[in-house]
Length: 484
Image (cartoon, rainbow, N blue to C red; front, side, top):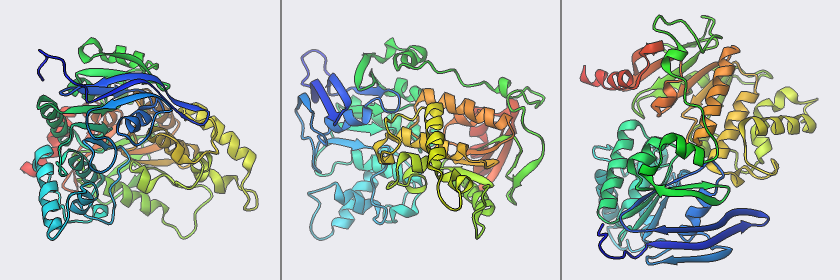
């Protein structure tokens, strides 16, 4: 980027407001996005980040204020691209066919061949060695592969050139190795004059790629400065919630394996399978390794084995927290309250009728405990941000009486403050005797566990416990089976 002469902004917002009825989602924002910079956009769930993104890309119009753009905004031919946390691919189409939807000039005979070549080239550029079959239906691919395709479509030429790419939690389903490929590509893209808005609750990634950090709170920009002028604590403090640091490994267990945090573990095995995966009462068991190596399948196998009776019991054996909430978690036609209370409705029913008062009390209690941002739990769950929808799924599982909770990469899109609160909540539940099976693509989360099974090629390659649980050991076990 040449700084010797003034650079024309890609997009400039001046005094922008956006209201939805009485709700003030954006409250007087001034923001300029220049070529060659990566702007890290952070803030807790419900801070207004998604609304701001939709104003920048032209999906929404401001209630007041001005947005000046020197590139095409809105429509399929836009030079501004958005890759959202909630994946928008059509599941019954291939990657190439999904690219065609966003590529208005791709027409005529042989368009599938050209679309396939373009999406493969983009995947190769962003994610070398990806191994994705671009002719396969999207619904046959893992969530990590779907996220990679969505990102590749965002950066693909599509008959023009991407000038500004907005990435909303782009690594939430990617393991560390694939996430590193994306971060490296973002740096190259910006070095060549492109602009990126990078939204993430993973602060290490923000510090890695962002040249400038913008902090949002309640629809306003509350801090904005060069990334080197922040550290982790000052950034979290600017977001308006000072989160506790994650418990360290020696706080969880000492070198001899004695429990310090998971005091509820009793030694009684409550679940196990033929592959060697097991969990004891009061234990938090992590599933780790590179994404797509059998962790989600192992969880599904255990969950269905424990919940597939012909009749649902009044007291469930297991509860489930989905990471892919759009496919496996949220019921989009139902309210926030009904999505939350679903797991306890059978136990609280009187002669088959829902106790509305008890349901409302439960919803209010969990709204306060886990911080669901909504004025009315009767609103559709789709009115919530992605992170707040995930909080509802956590509340649904933890409100149940199930002694075992299965969690499939559940922290996607959850802000750093809420993560620490949920970690503490999970630990307290484990100390009280509840068992957790927890698959995560984030090493920080895996390190919250008492015991960790590392997967490679669909099999368990290592079992770690206590002080053995570290990023280095997990990575070594993730690759050692392939080397053997």
